[in-house]
Image 1 (tube, rainbow, N blue to C red):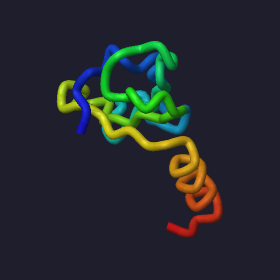
Image 2: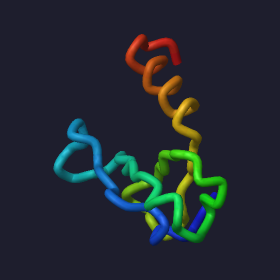
Image 3: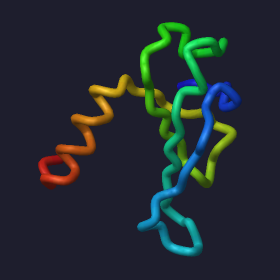
Length: 78
């Protein structure tokens, strides 16, 4: 679990989230290959966090893993 959220930009909440935001996740992206922080491998990564518990940190996934997750979710194969 990473806690350095300043290394991630563009946090977005799902458009499917309810107005109350009770069960929401936010997704963000790596700043750049020149940034310091938890992404020192410079590979494109996707960060995911609980929008109601931002202080707990976030999980980060390599682009290929995140893409595979999204494809499986779209197929309802999870």
